[in-house]
Structures are given as structure tokens and as C-alpha cells.
Amino acid sequence: MRTSGKLLWRSAGLLSFLSFFLFATGFVLAMNPQQLAPSTGTPPAEAAKPPAALPKEGVHKVVALGDSLTRGAGDANGQGYVGLVRQALEKKTGRPITFTNLAINGQESSDLLKQMSEAQVKTLIAEADLILFTIGGNDLFRQTGGLYTIDKEKVAAATNRLATNYEEIIRQIRGLNAKATIVYASLYNPFGNTEAAADTVQPVLDWNSTAARIAARYPQVFVVPTYDLFLRKEQAYLYTDHFHPNAEGYARIAERILQALE
Image (cartoon, rainbow, N blue to C red):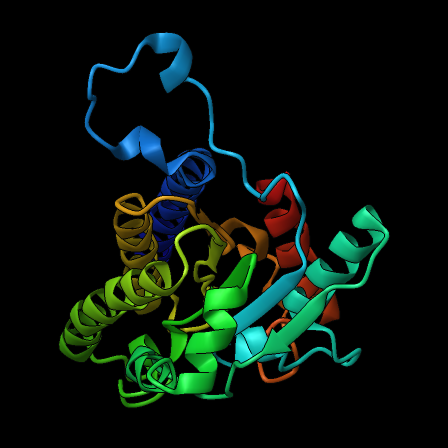
């Protein structure tokens, strides 16, 4: 039992190091996703210039899409990360922002695609300067049989469907609005300090890597990593349901997004 415990401890340590390295690299790439694109012979001075995160004329309209994380579930202050980002942008510019939160608790990627087919939603997306969204947590873990009975085959199949839907979501947003900044907050692992850690760490890491690769195919799409924000800090930054962030957790996500936008 002692040998087994040591092996588990060493494995967990190695996974934590790899997670940190992956997301440190992923954050840099998320800030400039064009780094993942093949070279086209652009002069070095131009190739090194990162894209502007926000339009020069500022942000006037923000639209938020996705699931309960964008809705702000778990935040006793009722803000969530999108509310905090909005407040910070308003304070910075000194003028109010028109803000529409279309997120729905429990929504999966297929549900979001259906929602985006609605005429009013299309109009709001088309007029936005900044689009914030989260999606994927429900896709990966809702159908797996419960927290302590993760079905790896179902998670793998769900990840494939999520990748297809996620790219379609971005494609449709970009088709409706060619200029808006799009920010996707990638997944953290709420089960990192539970018995399900061994079965959930890798799927979350794999998905976040896939999300960054897909986003890099489209202009002005930023994937903001959140995994490291909650790693070994689950008790401090998760709500009592041990799934959604609490107010402090959302504040950390908002801070990371604002760093990306700057």
C-alpha cells in the first residue's frame, strides 16, 4: 500500500508539472494564436506584431454566451466573470457598456448552436464588439455516470462531438461578425482534489489543447486558460457544489481575461 501511495503521489506530481507547463505555453499562444499558424513569408517585424485585443474605438456592446459559468452560478454577488469584466471595461473607458448575457445553466455545445440559430441572438452577436463564452463542462461530464464513475469511452466520444460543435460555434460567430473580439474561457478541473481526479485531469487537458488549436484557425479569437487558477486551490475557489467557482474563483477568471484583452 505504501509503494502504491508513493507511485500515485509521484504520478500526481508529474501531472501537475505537465499541466502547468502546458497551460503556461497555452496562455502565450492564446494571447497570439497566429503563432500556431504556418508561416506565410511575412517579414519578421510584421509577424511579431500581436493583434489588437479590442477595437481602437473601444467596447460598446458585449454579448455573453454559454453555460452556467457564463451565467455566474455559484457567485453570491451575482456577477460571475462576465459581470466583473464588464465593470472593469466600463471603469477603464468611463462610459456604460450595453451588456447581454444569453448563457443558460446546463447548456451543452449542441444547445448553444440551436440558440444561435434564433434571429434575435444572431442580431446581438452581429452587433457586438466583444463576445465572451464558456462551453464544454456539461458536454464532458454530464453523461459519464456520475462523479466517481467516469466512463472514459463516453468522455472520449463527448470530446469529439464538443470539438465539432465548438468549431461550428466559432465559425458561425465569425460569419455573423467579422470584427468582434471573441474570448473563450477554457476548462478547469473541479474534480482535481477528489477520487475522480485520475479520470478527469487528462480529458480536461486534452480538451483545452484542442480548443486552443481550433481557435488558432480563426482571427481575433482568444482562448484564456483557467486550469492553473484552480489547480490545488479547489477548496478556496469553488462554490459549495464543488463544480462552479465562488466569487473569488470568478474574480480570478475575470482577471485572466482582462490580462488577455490588454
